[in-house]
Length: 512
Image 1 (spheres, one colour):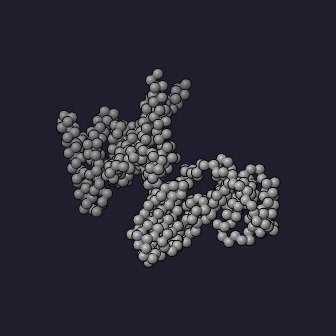
Image 2 (cartoon, one colour):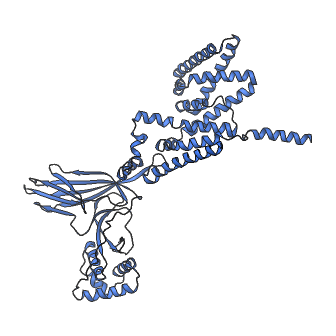
Image 3 (tube, one colour):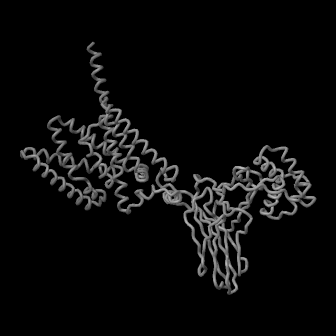
């Protein structure tokens, strides 16, 4: 019954830990690996306004929570101009000034990161079916002929639109298509012509404008794109090829035929779009995503602690991993050590000395301290005074090694002072007792075992992936706790015991 209780408790802890890790990684986008960066684009609209020393207004359509992106920062730079951002079906930046100078420069700048988790947030209003237009001839005959051909080769609105676009953009157009192409001088006019043709089939459509983000460029242009409504949702199509969907890294700027820029009181300004790409830590992107989602998880994360406290927890959170490693090596493998947590504390000291120097310094201190301990044994001291003497000797040895290292220019030797002196004293005391009670081989075996566990613990606890994962996902310690509970109920054979029983089995076979 108790064993079942432990298993159920471990299962609950595992479920909670895995659930929190999955949510933070898949929904908020927290990185599983250290030094994980994501692409970030900064898009700028620059408006050069020529005023006439009179009141002026400038309205610029700007993005509003564009799909497939997350907005990290947004800036409006307009010295001397008042600014209001009008939220509505189309978001608009509205600049105004009492007296516009001869030349003014207005900037709108937005920084975005890719967010494949976001869905296309188009408006959900179902548009009305358009009335069939009255086409002038000969366009009417050409459009009716094209629509008849397309209708025969399609089954629904999506396939109808795709087939229509393929015919209108054919490399070998017929006379009807050539007629429709004849008076379209821009991409925007071409999309409007396609919309006019779709109205003949009573298919709702609209035009999008956006920027295709990629490498840095200074003269980007808004690209027109086509959408049709199939009665359930809006479907996007490339107006030049009929390929469904939006381009990769397509920043939706505005929807509809309304002008991107409106002015009053000044000459129409020139507008220039620029795009630049950089990289930013995924942690900051995840923070912004959590803010947009209204999630409070990041508000209670370790990232909100002071930097000094964060650095402390980056070390403390690895201690349970080291303790779990000791449990595994002792209870399942059968490695003998002096105490349970002594190897982990030595491993923490190795963080400053590094592994090779740490092993050398630790072995030197313990060996010399053991010699003094054997001498103290002849003096017949009581336990507490003897431990005090050993601690004093250890401190003196640390000081001597530090001074010698300073004279020799060995910088690593100075970090010997970071070794936990009480643990060193207890190790020396424990090793001497085992030496006397069980012999030198057992004492050396436990000493070597402690050092091996400390080395393995150092490698695991200082690994960048482990320290990063535990700091970003501290709930992973629930998994450590669950594993500790399960291993705490293990009463089977240790791996090292198989060698002992193998020798006994061979002995029995020889006797028989």
